[in-house]
Amino acid sequence: MSRKWIIRTVAAAILVLAALITLSACSSDDDGGDDGAGVTGVAEITERFQGLPQSGQTVGEENAPVEIVEYGDMQCPFCATAAESLNPQILDELVRTGDAKLTFVPVAFIGPDSETGALAVLAAANQDLTWNLTEILFANQGDENSGWLSEDFARDAAAAAGLDLATFDEDFQADETVEALFDSRERFTSDEGSGTPHYVVRGPNGQQIIPGQPTIEDLQQAVQEVS
Amino acid sequence: MARRLLDGDRRELSLRAALAVVALAGIAVAAYLVVVRVQGQSPTCVVGGGCATVQESEYSTVLGIPVAVLGLVSYLGLATSAILPGFLGRCLGLFVGIVAAGFSIWLTWLEVAVIEAICPWCVVSAGLSVAALGIVVARVVVTSPPDGPSQAAVASPSPARR
Picture 1 (cartoon, rainbow over the protein chains, first blue to last red):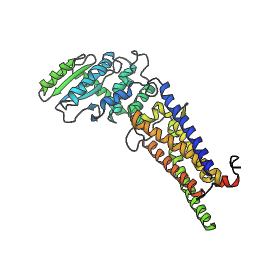
Picture 2 (picture 1 turned 60 degrees about the vertical axis):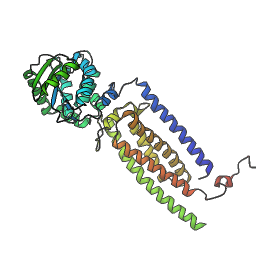
Picture 3 (picture 1 turned 135 degrees about the vertical axis):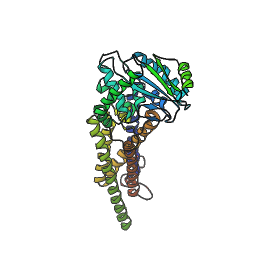
Picture 4 (picture 1 turned 30 degrees about the vertical axis):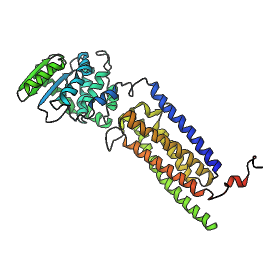
């Protein structure tokens, strides 16, 4: 193969490669910040949980002395607000410090979309990604009972959260997941829940029930008192 | 001289065989990724859990064409170049090898720096692309004239030289 033809071939290949890379980079710009299939906010949420251990529905050190339980409905706008403003503070000031771990328990009472969302985040527990999916769904919350949280959207969000979709699909349909949702409702009732968000702070020195959205100071005080 | 040419032919044959093996492995990986994409599923992540994130990311298509399909086409091109003897096979191999390896490196960089998720299937495919590029470059080197003016220059001097 002559040097002339080698140069021509290499030059043509570099031109095609440059075009492909340009098109690839441009196609991401066209999506306007979506993180795939219309799901937004994924990178920020992924970063929020980076370096934090997750097990089932819980984020934080397994042997943390206090457990903060948050009950939430995936369609509840106040839960979405808490997810955006309060939960990052809980993670930074109580979970990363090892003072507490945070557990999300989904309940479904607003409508059918709530049920789909609750089953999705419970299914994600089997892959230890409940929190990522929960926060992604809250970040993409639509109008109540508008059909925004379809099974397809839940799958897209699950994929964006990094879940293995084949496993997720199986877990989403599993009887155990439905039973887990019934158990969640029982826990909610026994923890005196009547609306969401609803927080319970449990430690070696008892528990405190905090209905509605507390401030980070409320939670810090509760954690201190039950520790 | 004849012995040297014979050795070169043998080495080229070995490189074509190696390229065929790499291309077939690449076809298998890319075909799997195309099939799961068409079925709307996520690839089974043997290691880690970033396959779905990568597959669902905005970088998983170029002009609406899934990159897995582009990968499949490139491996088919490499396999064809392994089958084709002579100039055409070497030229096609070099062209596809550079494009495939370069684009795979770009996609791997995106996984690490932008998507922040690693799909082991894509990493394997990138490794195969780079290996294929190494083989096609070696094939070109083995068949290039050792010294002096190139064969083309000897066969037909450029107008400037005339």
